[in-house]
Length: 319
Image 1 (cartoon, rainbow, N blue to C red):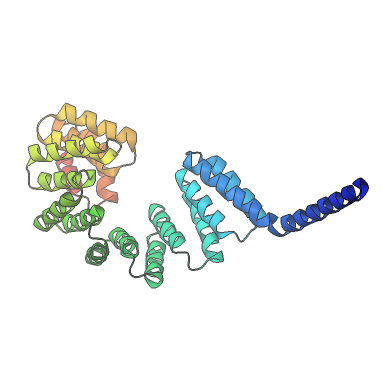
Image 2: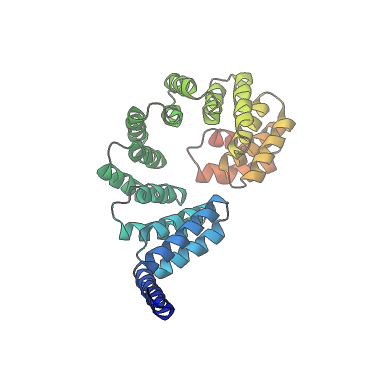
């Protein structure tokens, strides 16, 4: 029978062995564990819609491992929540530098380049996406968006068509095709694409807004108003929906009501040139030459291809 003293010695020896084993394991795994915990905490804050706190946690993870691609990527997403495009792009660059085949980082960086007005860089990312995975519809989606911004409408339409072949149940892609056809003034073709989109998702607000724009071009102002009102019912956060409603009301001789909607749109997005144009149109309709020229002169100069800008600038001059 073992003595009590020997039992204690064995127990203590076992405890010391366990302690040293834990220290050894901790020393081996602490970096991965710590940076992983900071990443998870950042993700939790991002889910709670607290991007500033999330950025702090991601930065802690990066401080532990300056090559931590996932932390840079998630930090970039948090910057996007704060509309900090330059910081987001910088972090996407870092994420890609440490993980060159990171498809998601290229995709999000490409979208960020678009929002930042860097269209050629966005097109480069679209090409990279296709080289990484030509079977992912987002590769062609980003290409379509960039070609649209560069006014290469045939190339944009082709890209959206390729994306739709890979994801035929995505209603947004059908609306994107319709949008390009609208720009090309192929209203019949655009309406066919919108019908396809509506069969998939009748609650897609952009399809109803675009349909309203087609109806306006066809001078069917009442139907245009009905369509844009449906879009607003489905999504009341889009300034350009309000602006379009205001325009249609102007052409329905409900000018004061139309001006209210245009002003509401400008409160949401003060730099929207189409809303500024529509306000100029309102003043032309009111016979107020000074106010009309105040809105239309610069637009006619800076946006020479904008529909109705030149027409109403000339009408304002003739008042």
